[in-house]
Image (cartoon, rainbow, N blue to C red; front, side, top):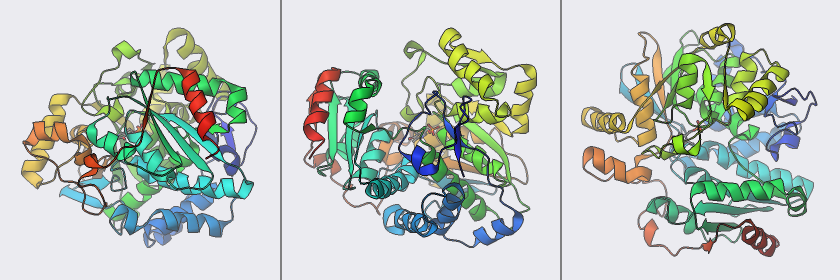
Length: 473
Ligand SMILES: *Cc1c(COP(=O)(O)O)cnc(C)c1O
């Protein structure tokens, strides 16, 4: 299996070549040259596998430059009951006949990003050891990504993490989660500014190619193909948990921001998983909902990007969306480049032709949006009727899912975070504190643990100096 760019560069690269990379050199994203097709007999065989075994099978189809036995061992090491609390790893929580949540947020940081990031940590450690190299991961976070990256990379040989966050702007729980880590390879830098300032510093450092090369700077952002690949696994698992035979179809509703999670659903469907509909759910930041309703993709500026109570979906452009459009346009790299480079840079967006937009329905995508009042109502209703407390992002998903259910097709709503992470809105909705998961050690009293972080001004040189001083530790 080889990988190509979505913007026309036909150079074929192996998995371990793109594992540690972000964008392709032409600015595109990596995708496999084709999707392996899963036949009925294979589906039946996979139905009987554990989550870790299933992950091993799927990863092996996409990775041919790591020995299969090693891939399977990495999957087995990653997806354990000890880390995820349940044998099924992503168990279903049935709400009513034909409607269930699929729990993707049982990992160490209580959000679905652990599903991919935990595997990435093990893959990075493996690949760096094989090459005899090390990597300094530099990132900016407003919460979920940074904590997932730190918990995945803590204690990993050959990897250091330098994570920038806006000083004083994360929730107390998120801060405590990240800043309580005492591992010497994890560095928290609290930037005196907002998230965009932190992000700008990361971009400035990454644009200094000489510095980047000398100090082996890497990233773990959501465009990384290995993260997307890890996410394909739970669509298969969810399908098997929800059905008895391969003749049945299942729909998924996915709370979306950067289109990474739902893009993995698209890949699963391209492989032949019997998915009926993929429902894209957004919050007030409805860039994607607008596209799936109208065929217009309009990137927003920061003034038009709202801070909401489902903050991990507050995006102004969906960084993984280009992958889907590449498939939609028959893998025409020149056309994709015309849209994502030329049209977005010059006009801030594009409108698909009627013919191209008609294909969206053939791919089985629909969408919807949700607002703060919808979240509150959905959280309250779900608690009162089923005794289940859901988080704000999952509430966006459930609200939109109910607009797209069809008789005879089970709808799975992906639970992307646990309510304990967003306690303030939960209290607003149901008047009580959400519980913290019992299977994760150390969550009680997390906020009172000693914190390890440094405050830095919003200044690129200060961050560079810090990396230089600490990248040999
Ligand atoms: C990151 C995140 C999302 C959005 O996922 P994308 O892959 O960016 O679409 C949704 N919910 C939660 C809780 C998240 O952390």
